[in-house]
Length: 497
Image (cartoon, rainbow, N blue to C red):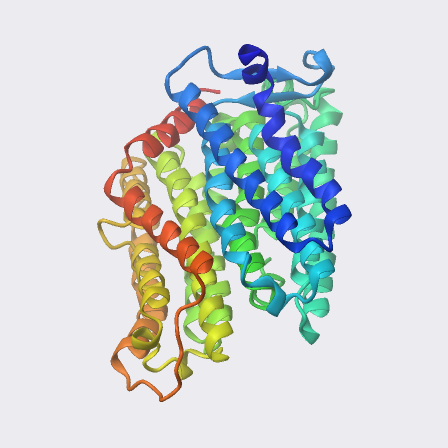
């Protein structure tokens, strides 16, 4: 019985949130039951993914390959629980649970009545299930299906807020995301056209055998994938949907959109680049240089744009554009240190940005103040909320003893090992610019006179969620060992293909 459960666990962690999402509308009027089911799914997800990660780290027969319906590749769909899959599963479950906990006392104000809250949770669980599937799938068409489920769920989450601009932001997101989806589908079509396979392993073997006969088709496949996933993950200048979408969405939605959804698309891009094309073919077509250049531009442009924003959530949204640049830049550093640092930074940013958006959401909900210039003295009125915001900010800047420093340090070491000093300079400059748009928020909150209003920290569940995410940021910075080891192993696997 135990062996059967373990063997099917990769499917359970994907199916569980999808199944609960389907049945949740039945209990829409029972708000506490709906919230309890969502939290139960989150707790089971953390337990299941934690067990899979433990099995991967202990090397007990992994990577684990699960053939859906008993059909082996290339005929069937494969789920592969390897180092990369276990790593991203941990990120998804570890961030989605605190976000769900935070939403218990938050959604009614931002979303509306019981039915609207239940609808929000339906799309929230669909997104979590799709992201879990992205972590494990080894099939290109499955990637497309999961990307579409995630995209539609994200649009629904943005539109769920009771705000006049929510529908407009969601519509803009949908139009641009549809363009990205079309390009991704086109890239998959080009790969299938020259290889005859949708399984990543078989497609990789074939494409590396025959690419010299169809170099233009391979280049088109590269281009479609880069631009398609660039739109999805808000890579500058393809980011124009993100500031409105992330700043308009309800706070839990902003947290999971910036913290997880964007990362899911980048994980898919990483798997296509390294598991299908391979790093040798990337270097043959100079794709790694394109990614370093694109990441460099994104870091600088996103950071400068964030500095000009007085609206707190829009400042954080443009910050996401900059941080996407770090990850895309890291994908172009083709060595173990660089890729390991990129993956660790991806996980770190998922925690940090979720914490920043949830903290900002708490401040806005309690005070009604949306602008940075209006937050004078908020640190003394809401000490726990502002303390967690400060921890996240210091980590994002890259201060030692916080998780952001570990990721940026390995990125720096990887870029120097590659002999490419442009990323080294840009990472340092980007950290300075990050301090320039986050430290003023802290300065205003702590060092300017507090108003007379009796503002207080939010309720227990919201404070607990903030504290859990802040603790994770510190723990990953002080004791990064197991997580960094998993990231390093995943990087090694990618470079061995």
